[in-house]
Length: 164
Image (cartoon, rainbow, N blue to C red; front, side, top):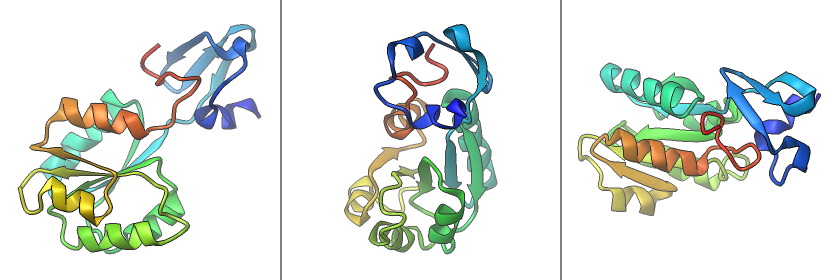
């Protein structure tokens, strides 16, 4: 089925160039409406208020699905089973730095982008990047987190689902 390939398609043929997105369906010219699965973002955060804020950012701003995890100890196993497009992790989550190092050393999970967000100042962005995160955002800046996460999310024909 064509829809299963669209979220990861780059350099689509010209007949896919005109996308109009609505919810989880996409209108593709003469083909009509097809189902497109939203990318999955794995959020690793141990504080409930931040979990809610991050889930809202992922679902509303990024137009992606959010899965919440409250501890870093099972990160590699979760990534292997869920196969997220991106990981968002608070630098203050206990064991987070060790989990990222383990994730990035495993050939099956090393290519999954991991974005650190530094809300409580327990580890600096410099330390997070040295540990293996692909990017880092300071101070819970939602606009910055949105912009950075978009750089790593899968694109369909060069546009995000909610950019159309």
